[in-house]
Image (cartoon, rainbow, N blue to C red; front, side, top):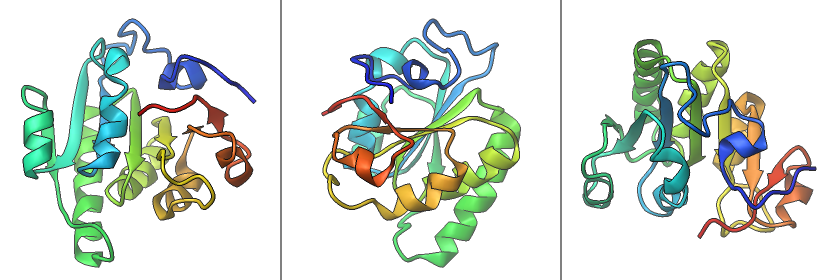
Length: 173
């Protein structure tokens, strides 16, 4: 198990993007609004050095927090919404083919699933960050993305019992 004080995807085995070394390919950050977005924003010191593209819903908090960023709007809500799952699947296929990211990074929620599925099929590495507040049960998105995840990062030692293959990075928030 790798423990690190550097909670960046590259510190835990994702492609080395520590100095923007993504061979001209951007990092794709996929998130829903709210707390999931907050987890990715906590990695600002890492992603601000990268060429990056975001996939998030066009909600007021996303628009405010990602002002000035390249954002591709996702379809929402995703919870128990099969129509938006299909729509986000089509979006994922189109975006991944066009952007060809070096890595896909997400902390959830539902929008991450089709992006991880298509990224895996295309040979693009994925990093899933399990959220801060689920310490004794796995998230649905974490379970669904699991088979398509290259590296899983967790924030609490108790989460290692849920995801034995994960890398402990400590709290991001």
